[in-house]
Image (cartoon, rainbow, N blue to C red; front, side):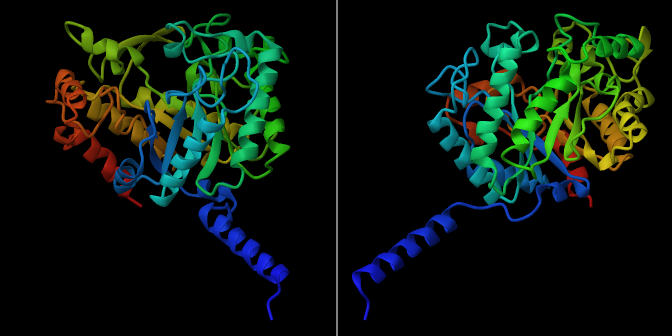
Length: 401
């Protein structure tokens, strides 16, 4: 006969079962996800997106999403970390929103890389009156706060099955206010890197501190890191050695030649064209074409090969061009070829960004920006055409196995 104690034990067991069912738990080593080439997209939106968004992204053939953290509304000034001026702990309501988004992405069959755009001491410029925030690279105290943030976040998320990497900081640039230009000669970049060794602008040293903190609470999660100058492969190639942790994935971004691929080019009376556009690069003028793109991308892979880092531990975590640029298709093709020639992972920028249409490849080139914003503001987003040729190009690559 059941006693009151037995009833209580059964009830608690039932509650435990329900909680276990409600909260997905990591059961596989997330590093195995990166053992085969993975293709996906970046998500950089002003609010959580929900089931329809992630189902649509998965429908393109994507297997992962790089989820950028920083734009969502918060009860604090800065999403998730409260205030980048003085980190004191995670914002609970923000963490709950993130957890729900991770659950949704997981249910759609996608794996997630988390990539904050703001850390203590380096607030994203678009939330900082357009000013680059350099404090992280000049203050050991802010670096300690950044470590604390990542320890707190890793503690909360370490069992979530959707996550396959933590990208410590999107597009770090410790060189920006105190170093050589982005496309300076490679030897100049190497010399600057040597001069910073052990200091607050030593990106490798900063990563080492953050990784040590994460490893104290999670010894399995892959850590994604980008080189300096906004994850330019040339800055990665300037590193004297890889990081000591054997679960690091080295990321680079590809927008070169930026003068041609970016929004500013579309405001020119005669936009720069590809191939053929010339920019200053490695101390000389370079005419960009398919081979120049490949050589630039290969810097990351050649660096990895030289240091005996498996090439499957290198990822093109962002790349893109303006969808209305006449040469965007040719450029994307050349970038994809360069990465896939190395059997590399990639994630295009970006999928259905909710406040900017510049690199939304589902949209046809004929759709003018004004029309996009009008339909969004009028609550008629379902009327936005999504038959763009550029997304068809990406889908063909994503669905190829």
